[in-house]
Image (tube, rainbow, N blue to C red; front, side, top):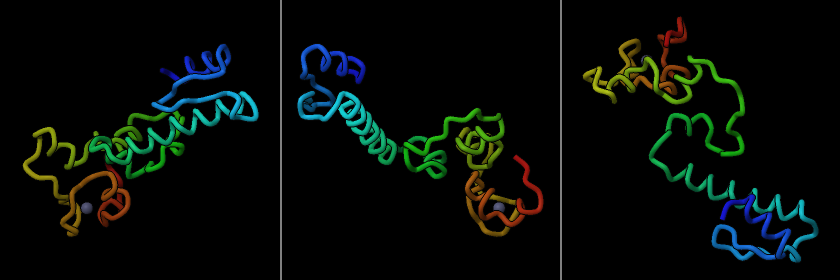
Length: 130
Ligand SMILES: [Zn+2]
């Protein structure tokens, strides 16, 4: 049952099932309190999925905590950096456009991914190009 459906059922019947948990309205001080409880349950499950997923690891490196996920308007460039789906050798290698992902702008012998380019690549400190 979705959170909204759970809240409607709680208002109507005082009890509801949510994420395999039996929720009783009378166990909370207020309806606002139960809404906050359900919100934290969702965030907790989302955080577990975010940490254990094999997908989106570049984005995870920038935003490891779900509540920290920004609600901003992203530009084309910032989306490339935050997702790793940009003009990085790691991405070009992943989609078969390059033979290797190692950065050729510096001598660190690391994969050219957003984290490397922004934080460690000595060459990109002189001029950042994406
Ligand atoms: Zn480099």
